[in-house]
Length: 341
Image (cartoon, rainbow, N blue to C red; front, side):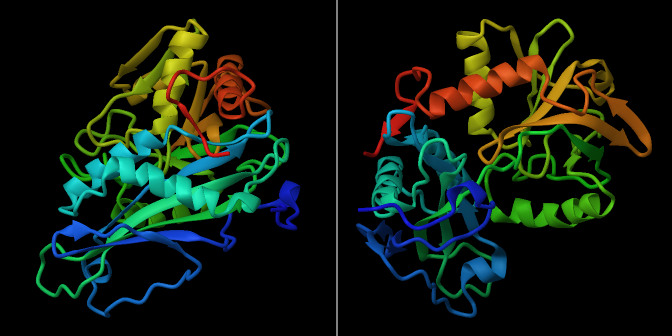
């Protein structure tokens, strides 16, 4: 099959319908085998659990064309495990982890001609998700669910390179103590929408959320974990029970230790420490690392020494090494890469 006639180098980060998606239904206490379908529509009861009580969880990962021309996906087993944790927290049935990976593989196989070519800067974004489907009017979990996987080709998150961004310290809390901040549930992102729109309207790229209990410690942004670099080259990532365990962050931590020989600390990070760091970045699936050049705390500016022109040197090494692994330019740790074709 030939690649689709798409201007790969000018793709944005948005939705384009592809040929196939995977669908499986849960009913009477069991998941069916599931299958690929061309139908991209969903028909639901007006009283469906997802519509009444936001019972939905999701994941995000990518398929890449490597330097050798292979189509691969990156650490899908970790997405499967995280979806399991998310489902358990919202009293949803777990979609089996091995079947999750196979569903992702089948969906990519069904859309191979939508996987952007190597060197285009584009990738195939993969969105697995699950939601309650049967009517629920009392406050309780649904009894029927649907698991789906769709794909869409996306361009690089940053056009023209990853320029450092300016973020603000938010007055809002992203999550509650002992709440759902550690899972990938749609409700968490709904709660962040007003905060991010407010930040954008004020000229900022993102929010820095502090811990909801004391508002003295750095947590994360609406959709990414933080990564800091000290002036002596140590990598520091915030540790908290109310932040999402980013797969990209975990991978960068491993790369820092095992590939670059850097010292890494995963610990609580006090906000008052931030002014003393040399570099900062946001890490997630979409951009891998978004460098942060400036943090504004109610009018007071914290300017990182790495500046507003380019990534700091340590952040750049981390970015280049992880993207090199994803694109096949650097040998990957065992089990990180699943070859599709």
